[in-house]
Length: 257
Image (tube, rainbow, N blue to C red):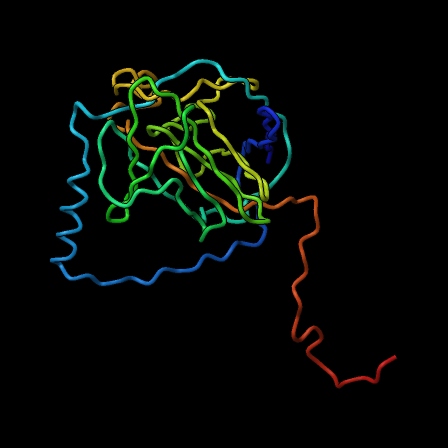
């Protein structure tokens, strides 16, 4: 598969144009036990979440903004699994959200941090009943920021308003994504329009959003940012060998040579 390296300022970022998953070893994912909740608790949780829904006048989308220089070149990496090892979404509107406010969201048990930045700083993320929200304002430019705190390489498949930020198609978790290098940062500033530029993300009214003005999108999907994360490896490098407890599995012990 082909991966593209993106250069933005002094930072080097990578853009992965994946053509399929390899037959390499799968990354093991920890299962989450199902927790049975009392119906009254579930009802209360749903009620709290409903209070965060934006009214029609508060709704926002993201429009196609000004050009931002963003060069890409190709590299070759592979996904370790056909399924994302982490996924999340953030809803946004011009609304005063309630809940616990944080500057960044912790993903993969702290291995990756996610935040939304503007020219004046980070926007607060609000958590309520397991959902995340952010308040924006029409005309405000923003960017998605991913910080890798680990020695691992990840692929970030990002969507805005149900649109893949790389090719403008209707978003799928299996789409191409950007590569986040070990202990590095990835900043996604807009919808990719060429090998050398993106159209900046700018909050807007839903009718002006890119999703509402392209055949791949829908105004019904405005107001949500999605992220799916995959583990990556370099097929050119030999895979580390795992120690074997019984490498021969026959015969008796031999004296040392």
